[in-house]
Image (cartoon, chains in turn brown, orange):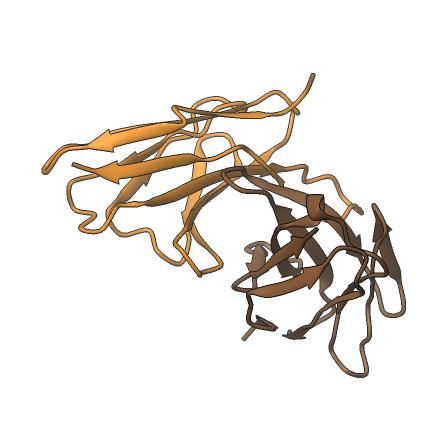
Length: 113
Length: 115
């Protein structure tokens, strides 16, 4: 079946530190991959996406590259800010009549000044 | 501005009571979804609808019901059969155009608490 595994949190970093949140997936077919971000008390916002192997999604300084050979889609940011504190969800979508987003459990990031 | 609205932001349910969570979108999206989020968990799909007057059960549909009478509206009823309804409920929608990736757009959520 289809599934997403994220590194467990919480992750605590100092401002301007480098961020990596690992995400690996199992999927039948050729999934599209997403990172969503959830700020406290809010819904999810799409952060970035990639639709095929070797694509790089990027937004707001965050990047993730679709690696088919390692079935991974790790999220990175070179210099985090306090405002990046949130929960980050990796997700995949495999198309089809009942295709839906499959989410990882989320990784909570706290950035300290 | 286009978007998804959910109401209320907080909802309290008494024992044996049915409650309905509202979800409205003005994005002209065909598909709509309901997810449940519990602390430390990812999102779990309750129901989804790809077209008006049609909907499908997700992974945890027991104790919930939905309707899709209008394209822009997808209300979720939490029935008394749902024994552990306390959670954060998220509604989402997505376009279903051919050739596009199914990116889902989320509402702000409704937190349901049991009295």
